[in-house]
Image (cartoon, rainbow, N blue to C red):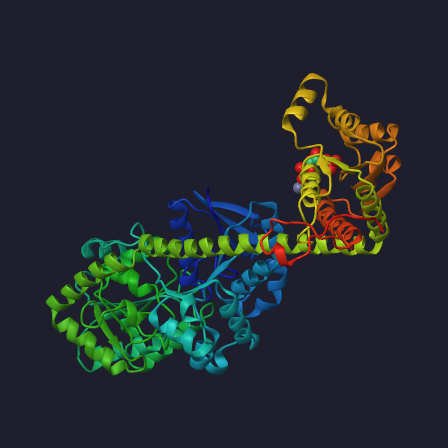
Length: 633
Ligand SMILES: O=C(CO)[C@@H](O)[C@H](O)[C@H](O)[C@H](O)COP(=O)(O)O
Ligand SMILES: [Zn+2]
């Protein structure tokens, strides 16, 4: 059966524009995970906030992947820092949509606000959730201080998510460390699964061709920086390092900076471009730094392939998807020794790791590589091999799917047993209620029946007992207790016959005459004056019991009816009615069983008061008195 996965990504949609301020790695992650999950048979809906009025609610994005636009706040682009107040509405609308679909098996939340939504859905609908934080609030605050505009509630919300998530995907070992040390996460819940690159999106294009396509001179040394243009990405570090390459090492090269909010690099639209440009000018390398502007993902492989070295020097980086993409295009990476980069880039093998704020070292490394062409070439080859082996989306997604399956296996167990536990508890509650109501109403009938039965036995009479199904079993049960013993260890048997027990009589009469008279026929046959007919029924409407009562009345037998519900027709035919005040046949039967036991107990008590010695074969009987029925009191 197809499993339905809800990926929630409140601000980052796979339809988003890569390179904008709020769109980047998470958009890619969500889109790729969705696509690759669908490729291995999951049905995936990506829930994201509607940020344009004309967006349809459901977009069939890929085979097996739909994008669901959830209304939450005005349908306009909002900074992600301003989204928290809209998450309640997001949750309500997401649940309303989900309720109209199938049952989702699992939610994979991306980012803390989506995880907040997932936690609420888990509470309300019991759907388990996995979270990829992509970035952690406390880490961000540590690095960005006041520049971090997310509300402080983020920390407590993240704490809650860490507690309530079924599994947490850490994107790299550093992410895991942060979850453990800053959030006291349960290590058992965390699984390190990195991001990946898409082989159909990124591959090594012949450098000559790539440069030709982009209009980059073939001979120029190209250093590439590509990604979101925000201060924490530390592009100024890249510029300073590049300046050292040019100024100190006197190596002519060009730094291409790809990214921004518009195709034409515009400091009005992307303020970071203005700031970076100013830094480059101050360093005297303004003419060696080229801002390209925003580019679609389909052309990024040309940039990666055209470059000699890819540089990424953020202050911190939860994962960093661009180094993978660069390596997938055979380009070595010099990156900050932080977060995911120190996990994906192998120092000295696929590039170099450097401290984020030491542009001199960056400049020196760049110079070293440009002076050692064969090494540059080798690192590129090794980079390609490394990412092919460890970081394809196929591999990553299969690890994510395996994690889902462990959650689903666990939640099935927990879900089932929770459901069953609830059913057990409610049956106990209902039974307790039936017993309580019976305790309040049945004593009189039970005492009267016990008296009648005792009298009957004391007078040498017998009891005929009948009923259907469970009541037939109780008829035999009661007969067995009377003929055998109940509490009293040694006593003579009390004559009781279950009219349900002789299968030859029952089958012959039902087969030849009819079922309605199977008990009546036996009553007419066995009954003697002074006998009692005891009928058991939950409904009081079983025809064969009714007919038996009518036959018994004709023979002047006393009739005791052990009933339930409204007692049916039998109420009017019985001398003594014990009617369990419940409607559910099971609850009625449970109380009836207690009544059966009470009748035995009370009858024994009433009859067996006077001891009488008799030779007994019971073990130890020589020293004991055997009780037998001698009188009715
Ligand atoms: O034990 C149960 C239900 O718990 C059944 O076997 C049940 O006794 C049968 O359906 C009987 O045929 C019901 O007859 P009655 O109690 O309505 O006279
Ligand atoms: Zn039953």
